[in-house]
Image (cartoon, rainbow, N blue to C red):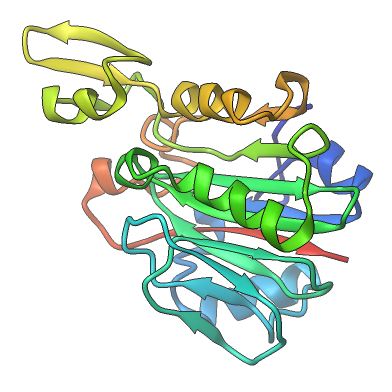
Length: 235
C-alpha cells in the first residue's frame, strides 16, 4: 500500500479501489479548503458531489460524531472525528500538520475520519473513534484497515517535556536536554496495533507537511490559516 500524488491529490489508490471509496488529501494546489469557493472548485474538477459534505469544528478534543442523515452543509460543533455507514456522504477534516486518520470497515461497510493532533491523541481520540465503529456498526478491528495521511514528521516536530510526558516518553528522540522530536505516525501506528488493527492493514504516508512546502500547507512553518482537506466517502 502506498500514497501517491496524482492530479493535485494525495491518494491511497489500493485502499480506495479495493473498498469502493473516495479517499484523498488535497495538496496546496487546490488552495485553502476551509473556503467554500475552493471546495466547490475542487468538486467540479474531480467530479465529486459535496452537497452533503460533513465536517467538524475541530477543537483538539476526542469527541466523535455519528453521521446518520443527509443534510446540506453539515457543520458539527465541538468534534474532531466522524463515522458513518451512509453511502455518498463525504466526511471531511482540515489539517495543516495534524494527522488525518482514515478508518475503513470493509465487512460492515462503514468508515471513519479522525483529526489527530498531539492533544487529541493524548485524549485517546483513536480509542474513542474505534469504539464508536464497534458500537454503531459492529466493526471488528481485525477486519478494519487504516490510512494515516500526510502530517508533520519527526524531522520537523520538536516538543518539550510536557508534551512527551503525555506519551510516556515513547515514540520520540531526545534532541537537547529539554526537547524531543515526536513521531506522531509512530504514536498512531503503535496505538492502532494495540487496539487490534493488524500491522499489514495500516498504510502510512511518510510525506512531511512542513518539509514539503511545494505540496502542503503547514501551520508550524507558516503560521497561517490555510488548510488541506482530507475526505472519505462510501460509494
